[in-house]
Image (cartoon, rainbow, N blue to C red; front, side, top):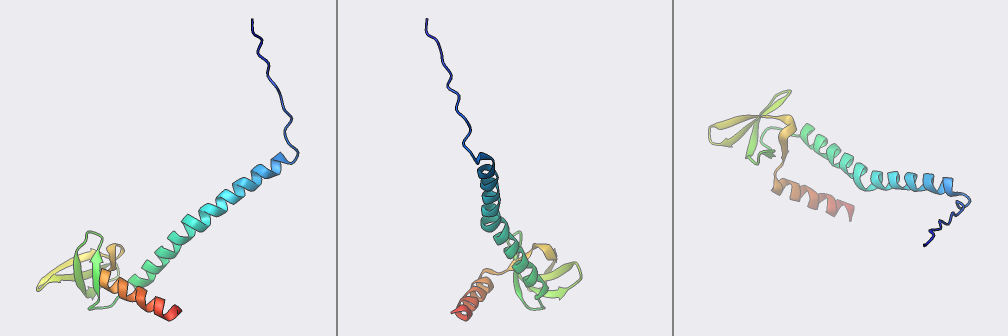
Length: 112
């Protein structure tokens, strides 16, 4: 008959602090690589929406391209085609791709 033996080892000294350090390091990694960039992006979008004026080209969350014709407290009136206007919530408006690329190039040129 085989006997099974279990070898017990002592916990290394200072093991409690290394576990806490690893948790703190993991939280810091999540913050700097996931949470902070998302907050930065949301801040830029909020600033963009506050700076919109009549005549600016935008894209809705549904992918509809148009120009702003009227600005209200909670919505934009976006002209999609001649005489075709839709009311869009302010939270679902993004810069058009061409405007976003132009703004990104301007900011890159300013940083150089």
